[in-house]
Length: 191
Image: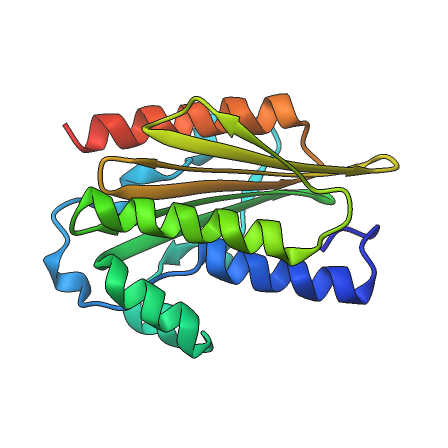
């Protein structure tokens, strides 16, 4: 976690991340797209970033439901999630997390994007600013800067995919550029 957050803010951030980047609850066997194709790959990142094998992989519905609160599990069931994938990359103190979740219908991705926006608004994370972003069908960017540290999130939906980039120690412009790279991967995979 970024060193500039106090314990309460860190816990809020963890809870927001669980909602934003968590997997949802339905059988993964219905997937007709490989979710790994929907996230950033090492070649998409600046030189020096290495995959974090412990935090990279398929996020099944069972994995998503584990540890989630009842409200989040209910939201995720209603959304019709099929499967998801998360890829984490580290370079020193800098981390980039790329996430994509596939739903049965576009309405599921919209439902989760709207829930993510509400969670960020309600999180109370000091200095976190939200702006609309033209990416995919609909997107948002959240950013925070404290001293020399930065924390940026881009979340969006496209067709039946909800996607997100969380970046610690990466500029807002670079985070948005990475999100646009991921969006091109999503659009290509869904053709």
